[in-house]
Length: 330
Ligand code: NAD
Image 1 (cartoon, protein in one colour):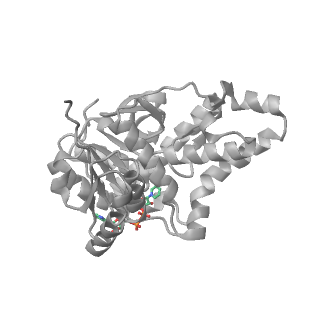
Image 2 (cartoon, rainbow, N blue to C red):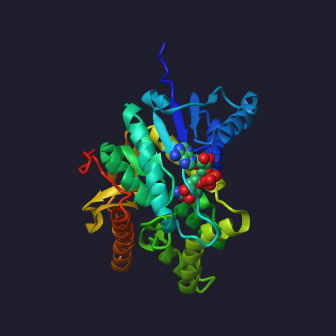
């Protein structure tokens, strides 16, 4: 009989995002064991109890609190620990505080983890994915950020609602920073093989040039609205993380816009950005170099520059130290 591999997932940060991801994950049957780690031991215990009370209704899975030694035989580590945006605050404004938190967690993970892939979620996610790659010195494909997977999902949902088409039949991508400088890649977004522009020209139900601008801005502002209304975003990111986890653990070779370290792709280097990547068991297997329009390419480069400024800021502030300055290539 074939022996099934036990899948253990470690989630660092049992806050609203970490706990919602665990709740989503529990219902997929993807993991045999889910281990939560948090400095707030009471919150950790409460989340583990609440999640565990639902176990009779899902496929068998162990949910428990743990520590960094649990990373040794984990297949996947998801990092959601750190401060979150307050009302009106941009993701980049969290950078100093969360660089320190993520750096210290990476040191603990690096001491134990043997084969796990790391997914960074803490904001600003692109900057902190870069910090994690440099801090750990792992092959670049083994560390990714959740990138613009959530933003691309918001984009698909808004296009779906506007066009009256099932969101699963809309292939549309947001690229660049998970934040204010992100871009809608209209040229690589499709409905049934037609670019969105081609589709809009045949549909002719709206002033599509204006609608495109409105939808793109709505995607960018989504998190601000949700945070303003209810204090935090967590359901859609929980589902986005579930999708990334599936792609990794089932070795799906799925295309997802995770944040990955660019080394010359798109003419951009030494920065992490949300770009279409092929995701499988080892993490990012490869980066797809999509054909962008000239305007989109310029906007992507501008997004990279915004993130570069943020990295320079943490260097100047003395909070970013890279013991492994040259990450290995995948
Ligand atoms: P939260 O405040 O509810 O939870 C954060 C948790 O991290 C807390 O339980 C806290 O105790 C824990 N923590 C802090 N320092 C720690 C450390 N050193 N070790 C272990 N645990 C530690 O916040 P949240 O709503 O869960 O958000 C978490 C992060 O995810 C934020 O940075 C937020 O901006 C980010 N986020 C990212 C996305 C995305 O698309 N990438 C989406 C939503 C939220």
